[in-house]
Structures are given as C-alpha cells and as structure tokens.
Length: 218
Image (cartoon, rainbow, N blue to C red; front, side):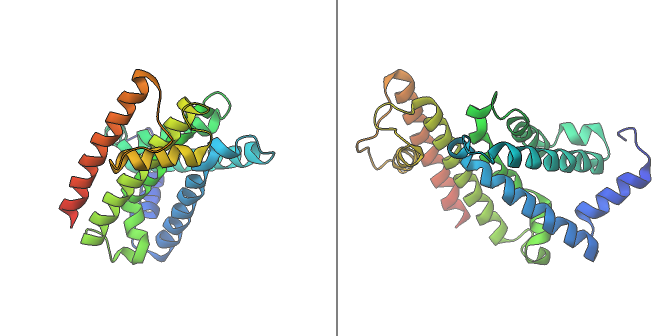
C-alpha cells in the first residue's frame, strides 16, 4: 500500500471503479474534468489572453487532486509505476503547473484525449458501461489514437515552424498535418530543412500505420 490505511483506499477504489449511483456520479464529473482539460489543446493559441492563467491554475489544482486520488486508489506503488495513464497525466499536469516555462509543450495536453478514451473509468461511465469491452470501444479507441496524433503533431509543427514556409497559424499547422497524414501531397505549406523533411516522413509513415490499424478495427 502507499502508506495509507485500507479504508481510504477502498473508498477511492469504490468511487472510481464501483457500481453504485454515487460512483457513477463521481465518474461523470471525472469525465467532464477530462473534457475541460482537452479544451486546453487550444492553449497555444489562447495563451496570451487575460483569463488564461486563472483557468490554467484552476484546472491544474483539480487535476492534481484527481491524480492523487487515482494513485491512492491503485493501492500499490507497483500499480502506479506500471500505469501509462498516470505517467501521461503527470506530463499534462506539468504543462499546467508551469504554463510559461513549458508553454511550448502545451500541445502535449492533447494526450488527455488518449488517456480519457483508454481509461476504464470512461467506459464504465459512458452508456452506463453498456459499451465497455465492445466493438464500439475498440473503434473509439482507434479514433482517439488517430485524433491524439493529429493534435500532437499539429502542436509540434505550430511550435517549431511557426512563421516559416507557410505556417502562419494553427490552421496552417493542422492543414500540413492532415495532408501529410493522408499522404495526399502538399500545397503551399511545407517544412524547411532536414528536420522538416524528417518530420514529414515520420507523419506519412505514421499515417500509413494508423490507417492499417483503423482498417483492422473494421
């Protein structure tokens, strides 16, 4: 155990994974929190706004408490270390705690899409658990993986190549990502230099891999 008595751990585990009405309500609010954090995918664009820092701090505090509760509910340090969702949420939390120092890594918050859809809590909440371990879950996870990849790469292109080779805004970065991912060719947006070419190649290879994975789901 993580240095805690069995009773608090059992209560948290029941909230996150139980079948009671209280557990269902708790998980519903947990999903809403995740959706709120996904809003911060746009953080790279809205970072200069007056309300950004206040919202950022509030979300960071709530996510921190949620992470502490989830880590406690796992009950053992081994389970925490082996949970990729905990590590990814920790990375997201760092970008929220240090928005100005790690602001350029704000696009990593798109990982919340992946951690949400791949969590047991999400599927126990959506549809009352009706779609848990079903074909719908498999397809949704594949779609979430693709969507997460698109936002991650778009954020990377936006941060690294903004102001060069036609990348003048977030939409330009998204346009480049989609055209690369679908291997349809390029228009007026290209990435300069060796790094740009390597990123383009990586996106196209990932697009082929994700497409094959998506096809297997069907």
